[in-house]
Image (tube, rainbow, N blue to C red; front, top):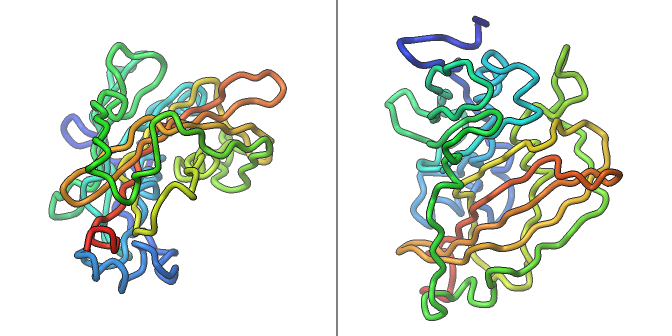
Length: 271
């Protein structure tokens, strides 16, 4: 067991980490203290995708380089943390099979759950956590910020997607090992002209490596589409499915399901 991973009872735990809010100076962003506190947050938030990286030592300890060929990380974000707050990743012990899904979460020292979901490898019988969630579309009268956005809307495609960060070392050299960097290359965004001004934040992310790994410096094609547009008492939200394809073979290298929410309290349409 590496020094960065601890086994306790039936769980594997990463070391405590203190993510830095590198986005705190972005105006109009949920990561900015003044913006976040105005809409009821404790302060500028750490992007949920950053918390995915806390699982990297556990992933590499458990499955090694094989995970980057056919693994998945699937997390629903439940509690927003701020600059340098302690967090750690926790995963249930695996059975050691080639096709399995295990429960996983990120927590604070007070045992607040920051993100909950699953990690998997191969083709397990059970669905990954985010994929198992029921997606419900809102009726048109429930939407104001996203009233022009529809399921089936295509996201902007990109035929020249390259990732140059998130590389590993040793057996992971030239591979994209950080899920946050995978998110960046898989992020198809939205048709932005269909979204009214409001403060947005991440709600969930599932990244699946289908014919991985994703390589540093290699050119890929990215496509995506909106699959759900919904509403909750405090937010409007949209789900997007995106794919990363090898430009030569056409094979799907990785895919992602991602949830973005927009705060109603930040929109003049709701005030």
